[in-house]
Image (cartoon, rainbow, N blue to C red; front, top):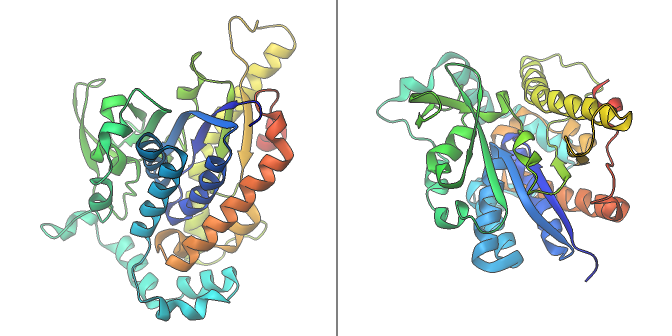
Length: 344
């Protein structure tokens, strides 16, 4: 065992593409030199973060990996595997195209555009609720283990709310993953506003929020697991592609704003305008696979197909392995992301 590297994880949301993060975490948990001190998660990132922490406290690293496996097997479409055999040897881009042009996706997409989630009462139920209710919240909310922060967006004000400690409940996680065209807003009492607030997906205001990880008690390193591509070479032309890119830009904008602020502070530190005593230096890292995400579509994001989830997990493991091989020695020493280039 080498030098222990303490890091924070910032886990993006992006629907079923969160299975990529599953793979990243699976590989990181194998490395006993890396200690996870803090986690900020939104939407799928909130689910991954909660499952990781509960599993870690229940059964160590192997327990965390097993809990993540359980989470994504529960999210995945439960079908006879023989019906999915045709997908196993098919290029992932072709699978994405097939799903995007499937009758199931066409109907789901049409309904989301013309029918409000509130129209389904009394038959409405969030399909994630049954899964999230089974989390061990005694462990999720524990003061032991990584500090966990869950992000959601207040519908009324558009401002972010960060849940931590005992405030993390089934409703808080469902709120963080609440896409307004698919799910009814989740209502939770808010001590800050003194009223019961409705919440939507945290990606609109923080995907994920980085500022909770700036605390002095936490390490300087933030490893961002990015699943919404920052760039797409091709211009979207179909309604599905246009709407998907709008969502990607929207969900990345809050992250880029925070990274721009970090970059600004780092320049002030470098030229001596700020002292390190007044402002800790933040070391930023990113694990992503934009090439893969460019091959996928809004359909693979909203339809949790088991074959696609498994491939995303494998891709996440490879991306984490590549990052660790190149930058493990940089952890706790220097940033590996060129912030100026990223947001310029």
